[in-house]
Length: 209
Ligand code: 5GP
Image (cartoon, rainbow, N blue to C red; front, side, top):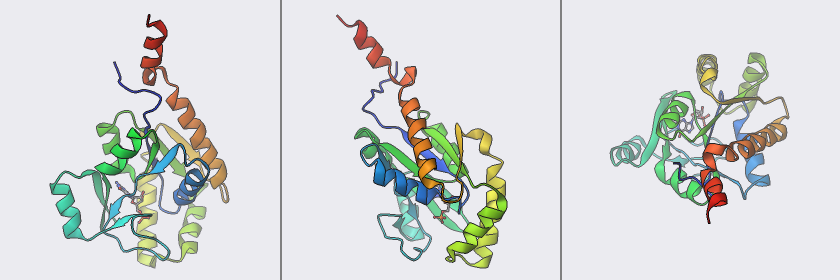
């Protein structure tokens, strides 16, 4: 019997190619639905982009500290992406789901696969840009990545999109569509939280004397 109650939040994996607009979707969710959603802030060894803050967008760290966290079993899952480590600290997920929040993990495909294995209750959502041209334009428009990095990210995106079938849901993030995409995620999570398998305790208490 699952021990989950309605109070327990769920891990929500959000993947999609770099430039698909995940960040903007997450900002919408966190500003409008701060009572229901929280973000898992990943650790990374990549350098901060302009405007990124330590502890808010990522926990920025160096390779030695990241490797120490792995060896001390403080990282739930991690990957090396375009030459840098990225990982989910266990504390981020455990504390926030226990407080009832759906915790968003903005991670790539390999990480999603690992979360599926380690946390079978997780809901996996893939964010697709409308098409490859739009994706390239968004990556270039960001202006914060080198040409080499952009090309590497486009290649990775094409490979990643082939893994779409491993996800539970797909949403297309149109230009200026982040608010709509955020609402779609809210709907998905409302339905997921009402699954019978997640509400056995409610059924049991119905029959309780
Ligand atoms: P970016 O450099 O654009 O911030 O992130 C690069 C990729 O790393 C994105 O696909 C992002 O979702 C992924 N990523 C960020 N944090 C994590 C993490 O903690 N674990 C994994 N597996 N991937 C992550």
